[in-house]
Image 1 (spheres, rainbow, N blue to C red):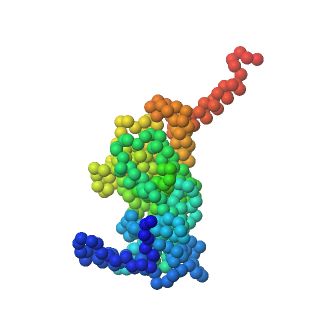
Image 2 (cartoon, rainbow, N blue to C red):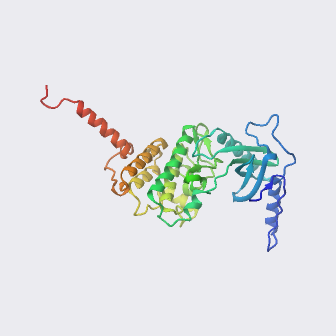
Image 3 (cartoon, rainbow, N blue to C red):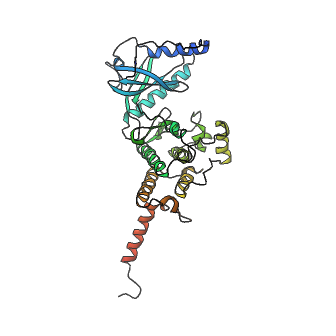
Length: 364
């Protein structure tokens, strides 16, 4: 039985074996205030519908951290949860305001999302000094962690297909809600039971109607579309580009542009039209889709609705013919809408029907 700390308990910044440096001590002290609540249940009159009852929250061990956040495992009302604590720097009012705006936006988006391939929102707290988001706990960790345990180019194509379809279905749902993720990458994809993938971390997501240019945008260069790197106006197609990079990760189990710094990768993508090299063993069915997804021209990238249909057709084809990936050959000159089995079969059926209904030459 793992021991969890009550939310009210102070975690002492002490490590065995050596003394903390002044910087480490100050950082630990600055975080300790987020593990202390002066009240018990804080949910009350005037609170939002998503407000958490902090007296029901137990915090366990930290398992991830970001520049301004830390993520802990915990228990909320007897269910396993992940607790994201946000640190607002007291010395930087502008940054503190930006983080508060990001928190409000993330909670507003998470609260409305309900899909098996999207992380489930539980509750949140915006009561100083507590600033946290509580979601379901996904035991499998991130897709990035999982891939880094694999040998390069070793994932079975059937598993790549299953994981890719989970991600595409989650993103299709997200776009159907009018939401852009804008930071789709393997680190923000979590693996749950039965290898089910869930899209997570909506910190820089936005409603499509409210997304402007990429000016001042803080995404992750290795996964960012060229138009975002160049701080241009962007659409939902930036997520499709990132999906292409993630699909490349699934096939290779490598980090994109691993021999470059993030800044070098950004320059190569935006100025040299560079992309991570596809392995020689990559099936044409995947390479064709990847090349469409990370096209420089956003208009040439497919929508997620189409990507889901393509991957579903691949799944059906593999079930019928295990050699599908080795035998698949897209016809030359085909557009993306008719270069995949599901679309091709539809066109063939329509053509066959027209021929069957047309009178034969010489017929009366």
